[in-house]
Length: 127
Image 1 (cartoon, helix red, strand yellow):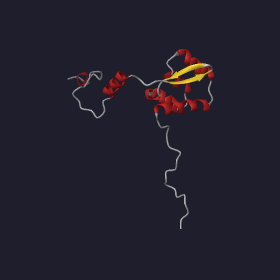
Image 2: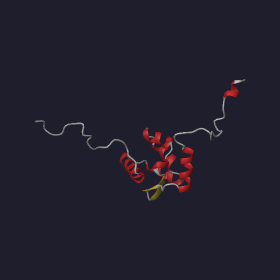
Image 3: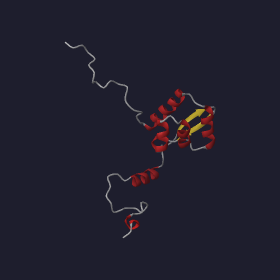
Image 4: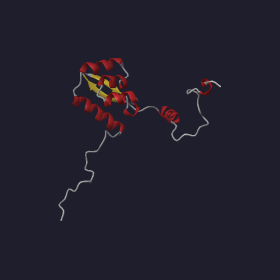
């Protein structure tokens, strides 16, 4: 038996294996339901369609995490003309933050830790 005989084709479906989360089935169901609407942003007189935040690829998320806004925009803005408007606008940080806040609001997603108090510090006087 050769090493090649021991290697299974990763593209062959393994329907007989029980899994905890079936992303294939989840994606098929989502596609049947239809995708979420993009977030629309007016920029330099052009309406930019930003893919719904729930549909952002891991590439888009990594780009956002590292502040690589051009790569992020390339991933989430599907129209080439809209993408050019985005890049040429050379947005300020506050503008990008406003776009992310609106995307998160529409997707009902958290952007990280809450600013409210956790209750771990004592705020009153001790007696």
